[in-house]
Image (tube, rainbow, N blue to C red; front, side, top):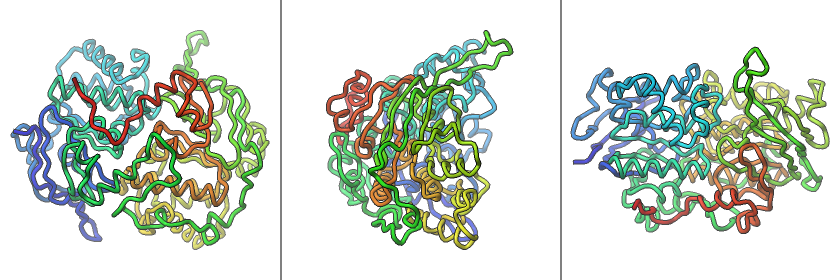
Length: 570
């Protein structure tokens, strides 16, 4: 008898325009000790399956038909109180967006200890000890101190690790992992995947692994289910699906994975991709809003120069100075970015990559150091006009698309906001035309303008963020994990789009990512960060072929290789 048995599942989302069938007649089994990988492009229904099993379908979503059995017990007919006891104890879930699954007004300690006490009946001291051990097991350093902090004090990757620890609190029978390694660098990703494999092997825990990362699937899953537009189109062993796929869609999905061993000019398109909009078409700047602004000279030398940058954050704000403690997120780093190039920053979660980006954009003030943009010291800007020009020229695509979008605003207003703030559009009609054009460009289509962020999948929300960042026709674009929430098909579209924009408009990029194969494809030069320090800077191919620092060599060694069969668990 399978641990989880899903039979003929159909999930509908009715609204005033009709009914959207998100999952259409899907049957899946997961055995104890087995990892089932579910892949497919953004919006294919992967996450909806997990939400339906947990009884967490967002209204007006409903399970129209089908049955869900856990160890022979039918669970889709249980009342809310019974499902609440089931969640956490028998089924743990690792959500795609860590910010939405952590309570922002409670410490990590409170959230972990409360869950452990609820399901395992341990004393508070024993529950706290278990919580600290869980944080250490998922790779959070200095866990006894960090456990007292709030979610906003963690980096994106650290929040994801805290969510994984939360899912493991009560030793569940089944874990539904929805993009569990999305925000993690390769070193922590390897730890998490090893932890998941160990759980399956030692405790016979079943896992549904929802991910867009085919390398993770190849390394981790026993079997793979491929979904497209709510339907299950192919299942098989990992080796069969990744090395000899039967369906055309699966073949093109596998083909779109960026190769880790060489650099390519363009990312292959995926057959039957989710969108058929301009993100998958050739870009013509002469007929587009983005091409009507100033064209920048790619031979103008250094555009961004960072010298001796440091950023320190207070861990507590005690009244007496001697009782205060601090953490150095960035320590005395220096680098420059040439006009028209893509400079990459790579390193483990918490290494300071995103902090560097936020200091450059002015979100955080620098503790020390100097940042010059186009030969202008950013700290010297005083007038609102000069600051507004810099904000127009430097835009950022944030790591977490959901928290960077206002949930109360329609997409039309979200993307139009930079146009209003920077006074770039004369009237409402012009702004709307620009927004619709940008939404087409990033592959969402004009219909997306009238919707709210919660109506989109994680990958679709990321494309909204990119459209908003492009609205001001920036000269310098900071991409902080821009493809971390995207499946390979949409990733290929977005990265091709970024390459086209750079070629046509001479844009300059600071590209931050933990995805080493993507970094190899996108960057001209790469800086490697660890613990707030910049360890080495090198030309991309030289970095991958002959890295100088031992940490860089370990990052490259830990890259998931695709295609390949799963490593032995023995």
